[in-house]
Length: 318
Ligand SMILES: [Ca+2]
Image 1: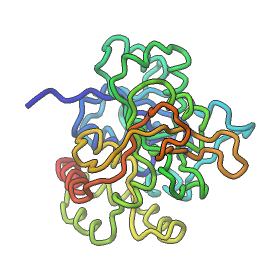
Image 2: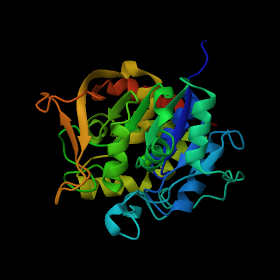
Image 3: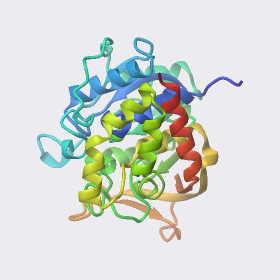
């Protein structure tokens, strides 16, 4: 078997971030985890990441670095909008797990990323499943890393579709659109998996949850616990019949691109000043702006193959 691809994960660990981390630990050599402000209170997210690594049996082997706790600008708001209503107070379905044994590292996530990329040029792929603050700040601090990152997979934005945090914007782009702009125009080869891919292909309904529970593993129990609150939230707010797995879908696409059955290279940008559309991602499908096609946009997924990957991951964790 060939060596596993090496990745760094950037996450605001709550809800589906946890399952994405489990997925990444299954398929990749994870060099480290970077924390960005997002879903819930920052130190809770750090704890969630550490606990998730421990659940996967990798406790003490994958360093977790604290990064930027809030967006670059945030338009004068003291704190960005967190979403405890989606994922529970602890971001883990109100499970209130025990404290992890491992502690976060002393250094800053941005410095870790810059250093690790320079030490391993062309080797470190990035999985971005949070607001893009850390990656943008790293690019600002040292733009020379861009040419040394072979690929960046982003869960964020939408491809001309309904948002989730507002009608026009997906959460990760909405929290820090300035960061998204910096990253999208960095020159790093990018694959974007938008929110509409998640609602079309990643939903696990009651039947799927029953199948997962029947696995009877520690991984399956963990999946059930962290998804308790989001199941209720999705049914009442998004009118979606099941749990959503945007971050896991992103990790799965990065692990096996063949599950992405349709994709195209488009010019993609993000709105930063719109009255109703801050954080909206513009995907120029018909190339009306005649600008550089900077992002490969995922447009369809083999849903069965994705589900099989998810079950494999949860089956393995015992
Ligand atoms: Ca996330």
